[in-house]
Image 1 (cartoon, helix red, strand yellow):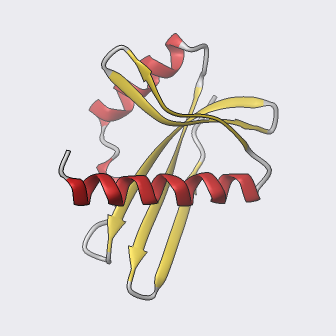
Image 2: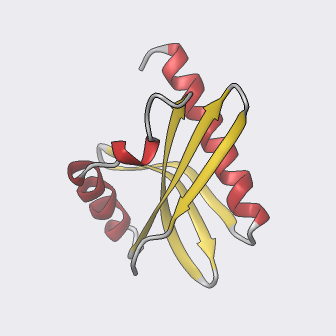
Length: 109
């Protein structure tokens, strides 16, 4: 992964982790590898373990959550299930010149 893309992703994951922690979540793991797949964050939220996919975008060109397509969701769900986790949330982080916008899209489970 190119350096700029990695830096943006790491910044988005840090923002997402702080966002969730402010709402009572405990971050249990970051960048958890399950085979070839990776779960960005594993959090404990309201007595439930949750796999969190963080999608980060720069500016208003993209809506980060739209990059969580069916194939990516299937990989994350498979990895989460291997860890006994049945809920997958998405946290979308938009880094703009006017600040940071965070959207939390809780999943089912």
